[in-house]
Amino acid sequence: MTTYLALINSTLPLYFTRFVSETPQQTFSPPVISTLFAWYISLCVLCQLPVVRLLKHLKNTRVLMISAGLWAISFCLIWVMGNANSAHPLWAGGALAVMALATVSYTPSASSLVISLAPNALRGVYLSINSLCWAGGYFIGPTIGGWAMGESRPIANGFWIGVALSVGVILMILKSLDQQLQRLPKLAD
Image 1 (tube, rainbow, N blue to C red):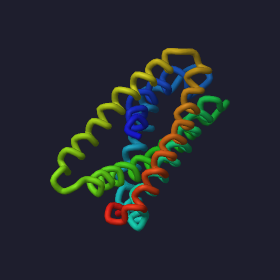
Image 2: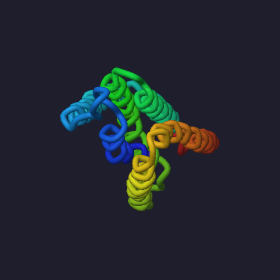
Image 3: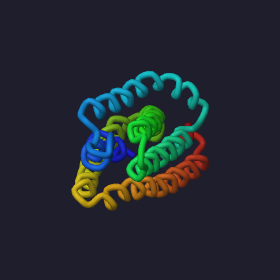
Image 4: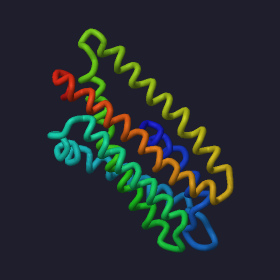
């Protein structure tokens, strides 16, 4: 899921500048892109505590499943925006709003899950491996995103549906992990 965060920072701005029209004559301008990402960051800040409070009664694996679903919705909205004939800034703002909710539900739950899985003596090791996931996500996201954005419009637009479909793999992994944790009640949150 860290790859999805990397795609927001690396691939999405490039998609906005190369493929999405603000008007029929021009793609998103730098001020529009800046406003959209300011919107995303503001929503992340404003929603962090309310979302954590809302989801705190759920197991971490379930919260991560919700986050994954939100990522899938946001990537579908990006695809719709890329294929829409108008209102591109509104589609982008909506997609980034859903991405903000996905981000704020993912970040604390992922760290909390790692801590709950780690034996006390190995907590630092588990957290360092968790950090490697971030490095991997920031290697994979810009690499595949950069490739897709260097291709034609149909490939760049289709990329977002492909990313949305990848959430299915994450959901299967999280479901399996949730079932394993249910068999081990001491680790299940």
